[in-house]
Image: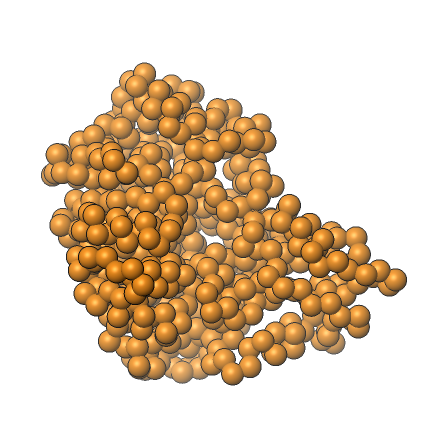
Length: 503
């Protein structure tokens, strides 16, 4: 049986004085990382927290984030990573919904402080409580089926959902990742994607378990990322496609010594072939890997290896084969397997499938059936087992690796007093993969000020969810016989000459 304490305890025993984390001008050995995690666990216990209580973190990347991500579950509590791009209302919802007791943050919590019993500010208060804390043994009294983390995603009905991931879920995903993308003790991993995001935290446990070193980048900037790769001779990194595009562009214009890179992985949204090509020419020593999954899958279910060799192949449009430890089937709406090459919903089974949504039994039942997760993505599997995504059955947009549920944005638009009807959908975007777009119909006798609508949205939802464009039409939105808005008709002009309906 393994829990999130297992990789850290192993590393502290096997390589106590090896550098575990580099954060700016600070570095910590595995002995020090283990000690600090024990102190944090003890400090939280001394605040009165009990097993299963929730601890949120709202911060940029750094050694304290890694400590929190590992120590909170390893001490028996539940970590709640908060998206730093979310609006205040969304963050307040997550804290209240999860009944979080402690917030750890590197920024002014504002109204968030009223949602919790304690706020621990990074760096000063955080370091102070560690200096005064006793110590505990990590992993004691914890079962692999205990809840380890609550990861909030966008809500298909307006409210976010807390994805419940157990220790078994996260450790299984770690094993699957290591089996497919080998990790080594000599690896130095640049953590450039935000750690609240699956793309950021995915490699943390694997790197610790294999005694590697992690270099954290507080906030992503392509020049800073390349500087750290050059300075520390980083061997691997992982990010969303927009990050790859940015570091490739920077490397082409202002090249650094980056020959140490052996692996670049990306996920969160499909990648354009031209971005792959430029990434390969910018980083010729690195193997490229695409990983696909969902927060509900802890997060991985497929991997496409050695993309640099597939750039001119039809396989470049695939998201890969099922990752070791997962089974993927393509099912029709009745749950029956379709023939190879036929389109259906991508359904995943394996020990990394989430426990469910926090306090949302109905939404859980809609996607978890017989232990399998129905992803909401439509696709097909070829005769060699490669999975190709073609559309989404869920009303969702993926922009820059972030999920945007259309109904969540529509709910805000409908609150605007002069809007009678609203429809939100994704349009192709060379940089972000997809952008949020809206079509609205004004109430009779009203005129809509687009700038005012956008400002209205910005006050209520995260910036990446705010429409990048709004079309105004005076006739009613097109609808089916039962009255459902026909978004395909609205989307169609934007997706002409595209080979699939997701980007």
